[in-house]
Image 1 (cartoon, rainbow, N blue to C red):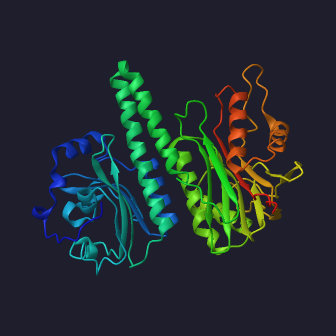
Image 2: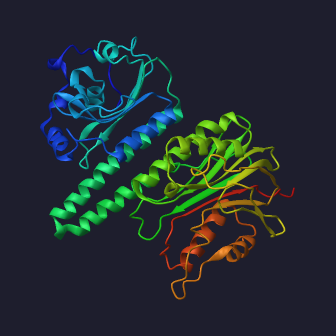
Image 3: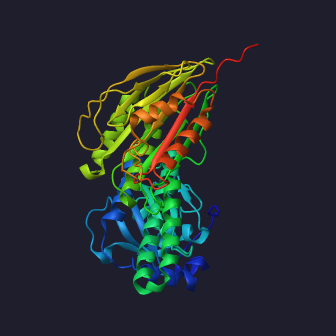
Length: 442
């Protein structure tokens, strides 16, 4: 739902959704009002500011009279009583009323917001925000960024905000599930089901809903959560057009799990999407990601391994450059069934200012497959003796994929690995395959 153009003068003109009793009960039950800042919310807001370049970012909770700033990046340290403004002075009541995003590029001329007092009081030039929700779907407030100058928000920035807003909603839901667990021990199964659904929803938000397919190239990917998939982990992949003539594929593996890993995953995916159109060098794209991770103060416990490839298609194959940052080698299955490893020098990202990244060139001919994977594949263990699947088995398995298209290659590898570990992998698994179809004989 979009936010309609409307003029607000004072508290009496606030929309009825602000005063909805069920919503206000959910706001109170969240336990977020009049509480101190917390790292999990500040980090997510800081991540939004970093990716969008906005000087200010907020996590707000809106009751019937004010917008409370649970997180307020860019305003310095504020006492709790100063971390708020009147509901009618905030753009947030529009988001609550519509239960949808509000994207403002020029607040001074936008009929929806130009008469709201915070335009002048806070010097708002541009604003973009998404609703955050209680577990029952009630709108609690917003996740938003603000700039003092009018500006356009890119599609990547808007998608990032939407993803991070879902992460905030996920954090709130996890807290609710834990509280429910403490007070209703007899209902553990319901809590487990809710936690599982939440984890998978958050993980899905960090993966592309549909994989792009470059012209003349087959593409397929699969993500397999570890164990029962209750914990959100950090494997991710993406494939997208970086320009009319170039394509970018990226795969990464963030250490750790939960919302902390999800934050790094979101930063990585959207930083690459933002930077890839500006570079022809894959190592340069990963260098920019390393800089963003360090600027976000990601610790050594939240490092990221990654591989990035930028390539062109020419109707009969693809050529490109590839860079690995502490990530497993990319595998090429040649038409004669030989398997070659592709990798370049480079350390994990988010730890060292200079990760020592380089490029390696590659070419994919008709009938050949390029396979990206995370270490959950090779580190899957056989229950009987704990032996890992290993690189040798993976090479042999890929070599045996004669005549299979990209989707079938991913399917065969994933099912074989799952069978090997009896569907109980200790790490999540991500696979992405590109294949140039063989030339058909006339």
